[in-house]
Length: 249
Ligand code: ADE
Image (cartoon, protein in one colour):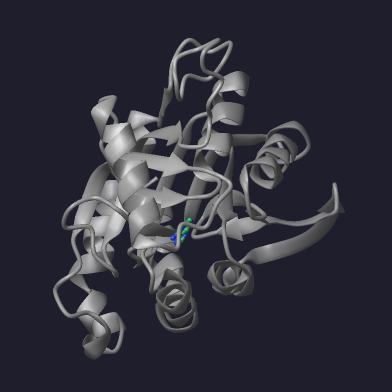
């Protein structure tokens, strides 16, 4: 059974590729896919690309061409929920597309043809990611420059929102969060791909789970915080998270 590890950023993938056993590099649909064995499991590694369409194409290729039986996404996200800080980890319980709006034909955020706004992640895989996230954050101070984390990193589990926008202004993230919350969707973090992969996985009946480390607060400092986080933390965090997950699989 092949597990797909989908990374959002090249920085997060490089450590995984370096430790891959019997690595094979294949190009399909203009993307690079790495197959091999990682911590005793048959895996295929890919970069999602940025945005919902790129991620949906990658997910489809992983299932159709590489026989992925489950997809696990690791990446970074902007924290919008109360108490979701830079360095914290969010394991997705479900996803909403914050830029989906076919109203008045369908209720705001509902996915036409799916009769719902929210797409659930696989419970068993998410539980393993939660265990892995707790193990990683418990050792975060040992793994990284302790100064990076002002407080001990926390693990959150809840709703994630995806859309084709890097949210980089406090008023924008407030607006997005308030509108969603008024409709009963209390979002912890925003990113740009997960909901698209969740939708493809639902279509194919493939289990999906996602873990995102918070790189910024989706506010006016988001672009600078994001860049610093990617350079300093994202790669080592992803390596440890994937290893801790695969060891529990
Ligand atoms: N990924 C990481 N930070 C993000 C942000 N602020 N908006 C969208 N995607 C992100």
